Length: 96
Image 1: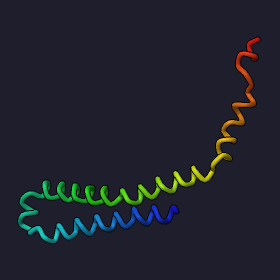
Image 2 (image 1 turned 90 degrees about the vertical axis):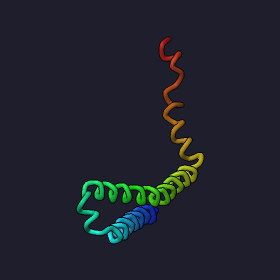
Image 3 (image 1 turned 135 degrees about the horizontal axis):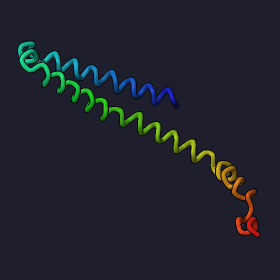
Image 4 (image 1 turned 90 degrees about the horizontal axis):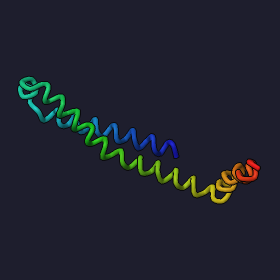
């Protein structure tokens, strides 16, 4: 499951890099040189936007896997959490 999530993030990273590379290939060198700061900022925003949108898929997969793992614990996980509270007893009896 971890491999699926990490692979998804890797695919999102590669596709974002490809999107920036394709955008950079379309821009002429003179335009990029004339406003280098704005060009670099725009490429950074493009990378973040593409990566952010594509990264929702592996993030959703991670949430799904975590919720499925939590549900699979079932009553075993709840019984483990209830045990320490039951062994502490009634707080009012401890004061008497």
